[in-house]
Length: 247
Image 1: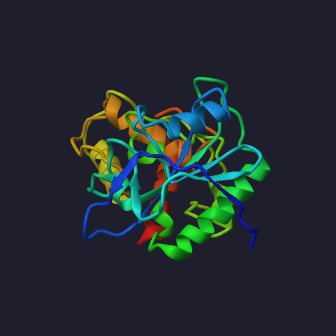
Image 2 (image 1 turned 90 degrees about the horizontal axis):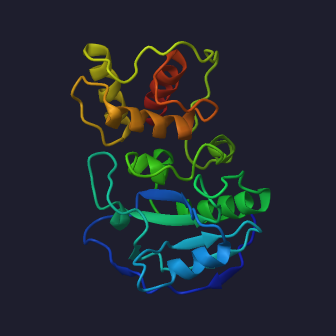
Image 3 (image 1 turned 30 degrees about the horizontal axis):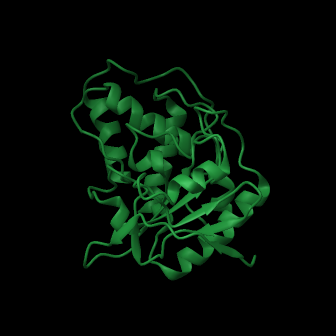
């Protein structure tokens, strides 16, 4: 197992976790800023009121910002499996990457190796299930896009970190079956399945912009080669597979 050499860079932006709960989520972010130094300074700036437990730069250096028993301020408004206050029940890891607004690019191998080593330790210390390893966009699909479609969820799942819906026979991406404007039982069924997996979504039989954003978040995580916010047979197959794995 890779040894992690931490650099302590304490952030003042944390408080007590809600009483009586446990840490059952690991939330992955990208910094979404042009430089690593700028991101680190912001996460440690009291005026910014944001933080994470760990920050990993593109060379693989890990910075420890907030103690794991404290609530870091990384997820903001959002929810998962019907529960809010994601910060109280999660560990947050920020990966240096300029993000979609500043030149999004692949996460380098040294950065991913450090992430995997750090994640393995976190999963050993906390009761985080495989389906609790999530992106910021999963818990806040109407607001966030990180860590995005270039993050190697599949490789991590093969290493025992998170889930990936491998199919014996993968259907090819096809014509959209559901898209904005669709209504009825098929939409309600889709929304119910997304909610069952954990996404915060209204089950109202209307494929509006909010549903499209949740589908987009799902695709960024589990069907990253085609992120279009529309549901085809491939998207449905992956969702059904995940529900079986999680059960």
